[in-house]
Length: 458
Image (cartoon, rainbow, N blue to C red):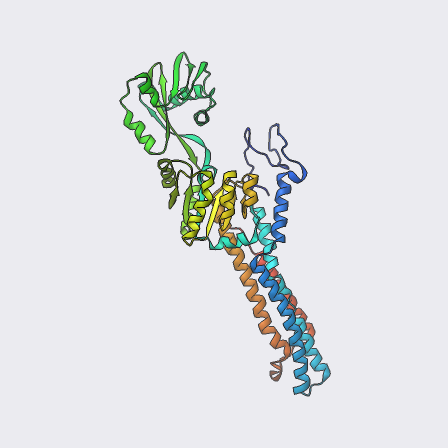
């Protein structure tokens, strides 16, 4: 219900756990951050209620049409009664029956329910699939999107560093050994890059005499060997011999952060790290391109790193070296080119851009601030759900139009028939038949709305 997934979701240390979750196996300690109305489930319920209570422009149009139809039904019934009384000799009972049939058959239930039923079903279906609609108008605008701006970190990428390359420079060493020694030292480090190296090794050995080298790296003794994990600039500082600089330069040009592993004074290997791209990002961008939507990546990273990630994913355009307070301006820049634009982000600094965009989408449930400014909230950390939300917006609008056409077409056909225009051919409807037809029209609208489904494309 919460994640939109049919399988249990793995949780690790420091992960957030949604209240009401069921622990599959084992035991764990959970810190309570919110209770009652502050819990995640309560917030989700409130969002669903807000979405159901808010009316879109299409729904307001249907409401006005239903009010007009009521007036038209009363007027048509009165005119029908008068016409049969004045221009025929069928009598009062016949004229009254025709007028009542017109008023019954033109009951505006089908037209009045055409949109609300679709809204109710779409809100329920989206919530079941982890797509929370916070603003109906914003959700409807999603069907017309022409450009989508993705915040890079935490949206297209995991927001944490991982090992992408391991290069060995010394004989008697292999990639696994280089990683193992580096992970042993980095296991004691607090640097953000350290976690990426540690996570790449299942069981790193113990380190002794650990020492952090400020601004450079860390060192320690592992398996009776002195291991240093340092920045490449350390070689110049210590005048260490090294003739493989081109390999390091190539890794840097690819947008990687490079650290060297030195064992007993010998440069043994190099490790390349980068913000890990989500597996689903490339496919999500491909699908959006197939929908003729321009894809743009927004990041504070330098141009080289940004372009490397964009090339991996297949992004059309890149805004690099963007400060948090400039994100909203970049959204306006794309809008000024005439594009209906969405912003997809997950952090507090994305909130102004989410509010500025034609459609704001908070991914991974986002932070509270990001969620408050978004039109659509995606519970999962999956960029594929952006495409799913757009497809669902289009499908919802199509259902609305289908219901409106049915309700309008039904009345355009049924009212003249109820008034007796085919009386000359022996075709006449009594009030009971009119009531039955009115009920059928409402049932058709309801069934059509119930057929609405979320297409994840997975």
